[in-house]
Length: 500
Image 1: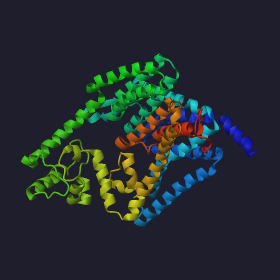
Image 2 (image 1 turned 90 degrees about the vertical axis):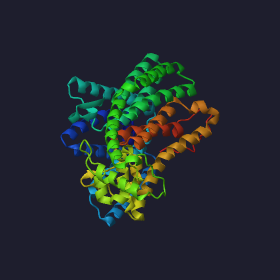
Image 3 (image 1 turned 120 degrees about the vertical axis):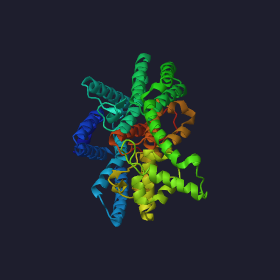
Image 4 (image 1 turned 90 degrees about the horizontal axis):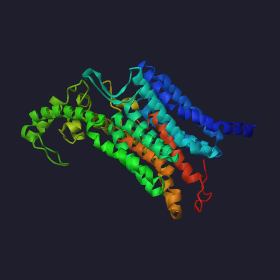
């Protein structure tokens, strides 16, 4: 009976995975409108249910259930230790902390389930580029629809200042959507290259890079330039599709030529204007010491120190020119001396006015107050709120050691590094068949992972956003399939590979 059920499930696996993946942009739009109605809990619960269903499905299909048991055990043990430590310190919001943890663990759980599905239904592997292409097309149609009905969302929407920059569509988190687009365009280019048609690849290149350019973030712009170069190198290394380098070169030339008028540069000019305001204010206090730079261990003369203190207390303790908090919360919570030490006595607006730097500084100051067990296991998410303002780090990788400690960060990064090890090992063991092993798919999926990790570190809203990690997980599963499941002619990788 069990085998009959498994056979039935296997028959429907391609259809189940297809529906699951192509519905992702629709779920994102639903999240956007639920956010507008302040009902985000609905879509959060829906994504959690999807995670449970997919994990259960993968577990049921797997022949090596102990792998799932080990993964669940590691996730559960980390949470238990983290939760007990938070309880020891005095839990403020355990439910909110659980919710954040559930977001974080989606990457390993989705990846494990996708690997099982690929092992059980090999035809799914050939469909992966198609999923990326379909979802990119869906995103593009949603954006066009938002403009057609006259209700688009913008990447940077400062309506109170009459400024609206960047094409976004009905997607609620610009950073997350920027990362999604970078991953989708990579998959789109792979799908287009696999059609073997130059016209299709050229169209995909124009639409994909065009949307990345118009989105207006640094992540999307520089990813577009990177993808042009990376795919060109891949085509040369795999010794196929050399003619496809032509549209890549043309696209790169257009991107670089139009950089000066891009939405990204327009946004940077707005930031530069804000910097100029605070640079002028700080210079009025510092006088001839306006260019002072602190060297580690240096003793600052009392007259200079007094000026630096005034910059922090008189210039940056008040709300910003557009109403947002600057350093006032941190000064009140941690004191002037600790905040200045955290910033290494910097006075430049590029440091003190930078929101990302401020969030990381706040978390670092919170961690400095904790004992060793908390540094090992992390503190709860609610502690990032100071005076009602959430100082959660946008940069996901940097946030891991704060919320889940050195242990949690090591486990999470270890999971990702396992796939890096698999690729490197495969390259070494297949060195005599290097160009067979180094396929266009392996290069593209590796690029997706690199872009996802780069976005997590330098942009944010990636590792704790299930709508982003689903694509990251799919790429990791694709890599696993290529290096651990697929057989290569003359390969030295025998069946020491034990698939999940």
